[in-house]
Image: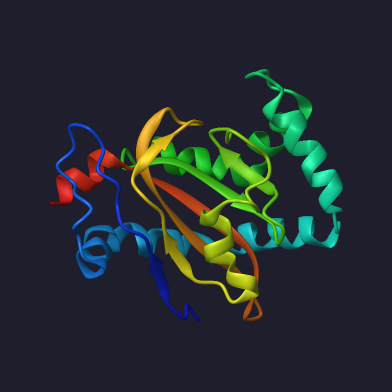
Length: 190
């Protein structure tokens, strides 16, 4: 079902023990529990249905980019678009996962173009389709788990690693789920 896992090296962040000389195997071992968690969440029928419902709308890329501009220009204001994405039933499910797991900073879900379907907390932009966490995991429709770099995330204001897992429906990749794993979790695992 999951063909392979892609990794990129961790960046050294000031004051952190983690170094970019971790091998792919060491990084995978460090994140194994959270990789399984992301894969498990990606199989949730409610999540798959939400992605399929948005995919069926066939939103034009121009409209996605318009929404992305609207989202980014909201300046933290909870405009209707952000309320819809962060207030739907899948986003509330994500909120419970984040609130009950100190190792998880954020969870968000995208469709087959990288447009947000659900998120908690709000992401810094609406369209993820132009970002490596989405393109590498979606992998031209051949979904793979992707581990991003250790970096500061604008939306959570925390340093984290993002794990991207493909959303599969009838062995087709239909979207991507992204899980932000806290740097604190990583340092505790070493």
